[in-house]
Length: 461
Image 1 (cartoon, helix red, strand yellow):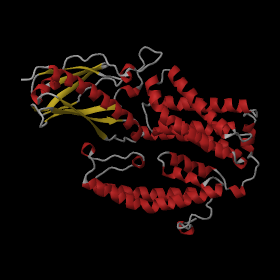
Image 2 (cartoon, rainbow, N blue to C red):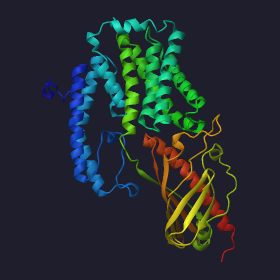
Image 3 (tube, rainbow, N blue to C red):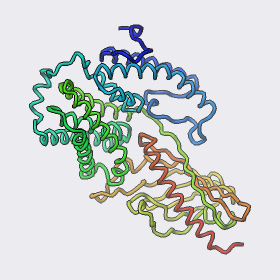
Image 4 (cartoon, rainbow, N blue to C red):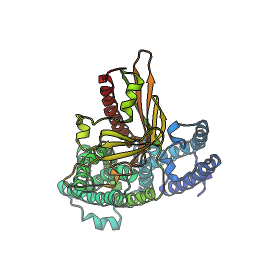
């Protein structure tokens, strides 16, 4: 088989699974090595995980001209590979007898791996008979033929596997990445429905119900076994729920095509092997998370010098009224400082401990900037257990530096802006970045509003 034997210009026709696999692997190897050479010419490292993890090397200052040129080159290089991958995937879907719209999975990080493996496992529709292979036929007796029995087995089997993999990734390796938050939910939905619909097709509503019940079982078990607390599970639920339902819908499409019943064991087996394998690769890939900046500001009816005195240190805040902070997420209580000027050490005391913040810039009354050399846990998990401390509580949401900037306005007021630069080691970054930005904004606002109250009630000089 040679690449020249494949028409890359037309999405009409079919492609068998052997040719699809070989072509995909060859093209991936070619593209990855081209990307590595380009990245090296710009002085950037490049691994296969950079296809799922996008970050600008300059971090806090945003993308530079050099980085823009780098990513522009990568995009130009990727265009022919995107075209070829789309064409081959459409032809493979047609060969399998699956809906062509599933090609959208080709463009979704991590889920494109599932699509690729699925298309490698499934045989051609035109050459598939309704007879199961001998090995799956022996195992098929283990799956109850009753609707209730097959649903229970699908839920239990996939939930048990997912709990083990989640415990390995999160509690064992401290890995909170694509494999845990994307792979496991999709696997839950897909595999539970394939087992449920093994003997005969089920309706889409019942398939999705089985998928979501599988997710519920995993969540309850992780909570009961002290692997995770309520807050983390609640934050993960929107992403996990959507992916589980999507996996369940793909399983529904497959179980509607009876010629694929014999391949259900192969699909489930591949998914089971993929999950821990990818989690281990993530764990040892050494990917460094991007550095994000969160800025919050408000206007205070006071002069900058009055505001400055309450920025450097401030008295204890009243108990939080925000429901979010009442769930256990860490919140600021007071700020103390030892010394004055650059080199002084500020301590911002939170409900879970203190941030240690050596002052790096003391430009009174305009700018106070500091590094963060030590920080407490991000939250106290709500759990049945008194001291639940999953790995993500420490060293996953990492504050690197911060500042307060004061700007005198023409009307005699002061705009106070607080900025935190941080890293979030939980993936996918776009999802957890949303949560962490929101939490940091609320922390900022709690502090800035307190400073505003103190400054505006102090007699003005």
